Amino acid sequence: MQELRSDLLSGTGAKKHGCDVCRHVDSHGDIYNQIDWNLPEPVAANFELNRREFYDGKVELSSLPLFVSMDISYQCNFSCIMCELVKTPLEMPGERIGELLETLSEFLVHMHVSGGEPLLNGPFRGYLSSSQHFPSTLSITTNGHFLNNVLLNDLVRFPRINLHISIDSFDPDTMSYQRAGCDPHRVFNALSLALAMREQVNQKRPKSWYVCLQVVPTLLNAAGLPGYLRQAQELGVDEVQFCSLQGSFPDLSLTGLSVGDAIVLAKDIRDVIQSGLNFEVTGLVDVLQQIDRCAFRREVLNG
Ligand SMILES: C[S@@+](CC[C@H](N)C(=O)[O-])C[C@H]1O[C@@H](n2cnc3c(N)ncnc32)[C@H](O)[C@@H]1O
Ligand code: SF4
Image 1 (cartoon, rainbow, N blue to C red):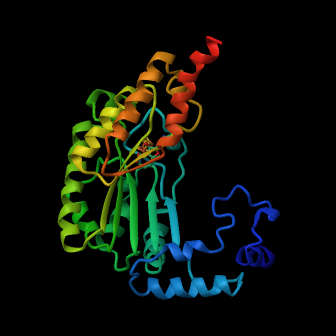
Image 2 (spheres, rainbow, N blue to C red):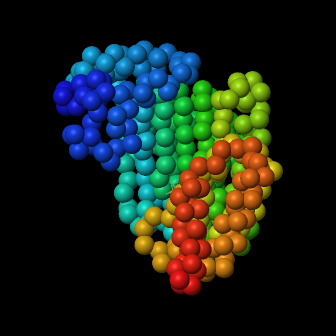
């Protein structure tokens, strides 16, 4: 470990240790430089201690973690047709969750919580409404069902909020089919509430709230993706994140697009992008590559 750390710091790199798969390989501690936020105490003190320990080559740290990402429970009120997680009845013990969140968050630069549906979880809801300690940034990935003004007001207590709301389509029928069990209008309304709260909070504390839409492109919602991006622009979200379909779903995979549909879709998506969007788009390169591969089949077939 010490040798690995010293190779990272000297710039020799970590590849010789077989760490090629990690995206932080050869980052030489850049992560510390990327954080230029005004961190509140005691997060700032823990951050400085962690940085010092890293640069001193320590392998046993007295600082606490800076970033934590957790799936607290795989229970969910939806049964989205592409989601395998909810088939796994994993659960953190209820009494530990509140304690863990409270203890860790005092020192965290960033805490991310997902699931299952995290807002279905009682201890997590309890933490959100009554915590005494706050991470510098809290991000939550949610299906949006339980987002209402009471919950949004609880979130205002946190210094920075990053809300990721999963909406696979703005067409109610497609949305309720792909995200089985959801009431699309309730989720669309929750998004509007979240955007209104973001405006309100950001006026007083600029850039402290961020709203991102997450979408899993499938054969069901693919044709609507150009319109989805236009709708996102109209609503004024901060980001649309495309999450490529993972797992084995032959009936949903974009590889099932016909050549003709793939050509039209790839062009329509590129046209929307080129028309200029005023929000971040992430994960789209991967999706366009999948669509292009389907379109490219024509050239292969035609020789
Ligand atoms: C597993 S969910 C957990 C959080 C919350 N329940 C939600 O739906 O946002 C996290 C994200 O994974 C996405 N997702 C679900 N199944 C997926 C799959 N097979 N491949 C890629 N992303 C998937 C969801 O749409 C959601 O955006
Ligand atoms: S809402 Fe999230 S966790 Fe629940 S089934 Fe859908 S993708 Fe999976």
